Image 1 (spheres, one colour):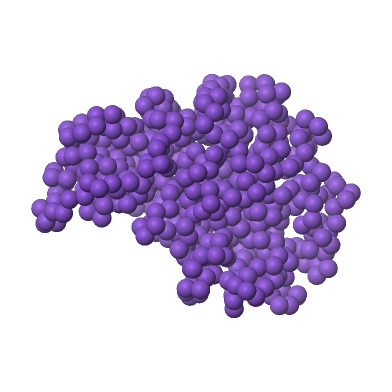
Image 2 (cartoon, rainbow, N blue to C red; image 1 turned 180 degrees about the vertical axis):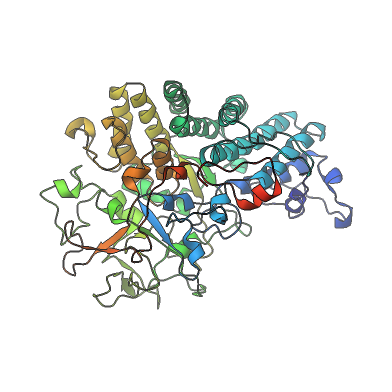
Length: 563
């Protein structure tokens, strides 16, 4: 698997952060893997390419073997509809097979080959600033740990490859625990090398906080299979505490601060961004906003409206479990009004979802108003859920920007780990080791930021659907649903690590059939895409299948159980 693909990125002088002023013009015919990996400048360009292995801001895999928020659709909170191609459901229907490409997107040995090649070239390259050599290596090792952490969660045992190998070497799967321990050791070591912050020129690079936050994630994600949960909770707590005690990060205040995290206004300056995929003008953009926008809404003066009809929708299970401003589930709050269901709800709902009745800039002109109405029996209903549109009637909203010239040219950084996740991971870890008082403090910090009542004042919620058996942890997982809705794979992590699949995965429902009560909790609801999403859970799903192409290419790789 000797790999020189990364040279392409060097030739393009990736303007990812600071391509600086080191670029020298050379005859492209003379550039080879042995002539470009020789200087600090070469390695800086190659390192910038490694940042492209972070998750991308998209809801479609699109065959590029890089997942964005796609795993979010493998949960009870949301679903994906592939309108022009049934295979584009991104696994939402759980009709998974060993040839489903979207399930293969964590298996990243192409990227790992590039990272290992970089790390082997690093010691022999000439550096003007020797401090950069060590930091470059730590950044590259972070990406390797990031990829392996996802593979351990998704596939279990996977080959652990830490050096460049020949293409004819057929590896076997390394035990899951060994790979996990490697990830933790790597993150421990590089956390002591990476800086806590950077100058403006290098803002957005991997920090010590990112390494510690990934370590906390890794510890908690291992709960579903590791034999020593106490050590996992303790390790996560220690990592989160170090981040909190550093004083580097803080929550942006108010619901306004929360909302700003999904716009370009927060890019590189947000106090709560720990890890993000950075937008680079002229080089890196994304079409997330286009794939989320409603059919009847404005998509930019330069937009191409085309045939791309991919749509994402929140499930009724999620929408109906978002609390009222009183900290109660709608079904338990006597003040809840099904005729005006979006009033007096957790303020994050309005930031996270486009809801029936919302007024949006119209497709005809951004100065016109379009009322989003997915109900098939209420006109006008350009976004009728029974047609080629959102399958539930509850749409994603984060990262939609109606001021873009074209929504397929998104310019906001995609936030991968925010400080609120660290606070909630710390709360979860404390709860796991029995410190409920400490857990409550950090859980309430996240709630208080957006104006929700603290559980210290109103008491913990009684979660009955998808319970871990620990009321404090249930409350924390519920808060994670509200905080990260439509944003990333956090809900997928939670279901997998606490084995909640059989409790929460089933038929997907959308908006109520009632034409007068858009928040009807008891009447019939539309089934998302008819019976297409009558999902059935199987415990084999806790490990994704190894793609058949991999099994065919390497006789030493065995399939996961049940596949």
